[in-house]
Image 1 (tube, rainbow, N blue to C red):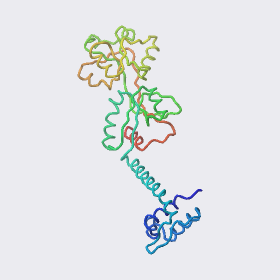
Image 2: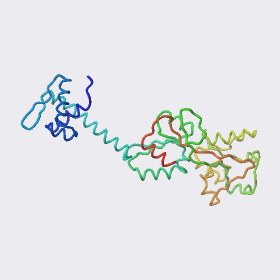
Image 3: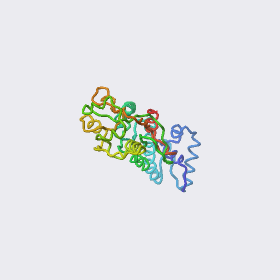
Image 4: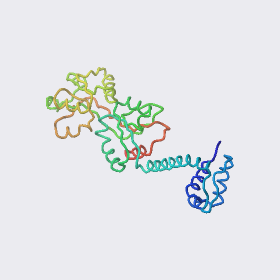
Length: 292
């Protein structure tokens, strides 16, 4: 049986108010329209749902049974409407973002703070990982968007460039003699090199660059975070490959210095990654607007 939802809505308000006139006012209808809707519903079931009394209308026994179901459904619909309004106004909901620890800390943090201040009702979920892991999270529906290093070549994904970063090699006081020296790649490899241990986009890019010049890049030390890359270089354990923007403070205060190379290291680009042809949530759309 396929009955128009509007008929149930008229039935609900007629039963709730006990008056066809009051139901008409609530629904912004005429009383004849309400009466016609009730008649249609009764004809569909083949059951009388109301009887008239001096105060208006009252439910028959069968009508009371129907009302017990319709009342619950109407409450759920009202709650759903309130929830949709809250989501639209960003009063509630969630924002799920994927990215690396370093991008969250050094790039996204100010935007996250701003977003949270404007929309405190939105729950933030941050998923950490390498670029391949973030791509997997996005395709599995575990995140709304990813912030990753480019290039990303995947027909399922849409990536918009956001900012440009510059990677470099840095060292601490133990290698102070290298401050005013321009090193060749072969000379650099005579020193202990420290790289990020996981299969990050930055690690792949620098490895490919060295290979293009005929040098295999085999790190002396591998670490699991950018913070450790910075700290190990500061402690003199080797020369770390990091993003210049992420060590701006250390470079400025002099606890680290940049190694100058004969070869120019190409810049990298950070992109905002979403699923192609997949609508974003209101929260995710607002955050993307904020970043862009």
